[in-house]
Image: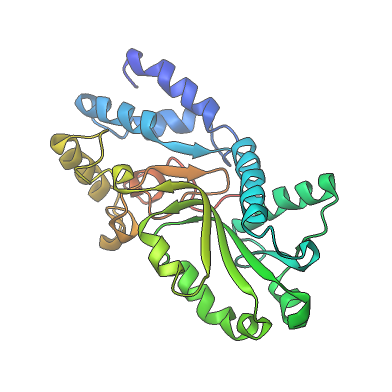
Length: 265
């Protein structure tokens, strides 16, 4: 059972994470209890540092993202701007797409939200810009792989290509700019957000050694022990937790119960 001094923090964070699928106070306590008693200060520090994106925050950031994109494209024809969620029907970008669709309906905007199937049917003279929306990019690898699949459909439109993200981890920017004309984001993460970087003010060298010990304890494969791409992040969304975050948050195994689902609703 967690030390009494951490119960208030645990209760508060269970409320902060409440819209994450299967999140309960009991689940958070079980996660916390996986830390040895003398390591509970570290568990408490992790809970304090986690940056969680609940639905109200995602909706607010989505509105900001639309405003930034429209400002960037102020000289374009409004009805020739197309917002496209990256990935399939179950991808996290659909959460953002729903928020953007609500904005479109409320404002009666003339810009469109469409799928890649819709893009394929568009004539070049109908398109000024294609805006691909996504929640988060940690290394840019997933988006680069996605681009290799859709490039033959997109390039013939001869339109400006923008990738618009709620959250961008700085190392991903250069990878995305290999195929996009511009990257627009609301929140950008840098080395100070990597728990294993000496630039991160939340953890000292002793903390980092302890973090690594518990990341290994999760049973995560080597490429995920420090978060995919060694990103070392502590972030999660209502709809899931990126694998660039420490496996302490999302890895599920016989030796570790995750705090967040890797993929949620």
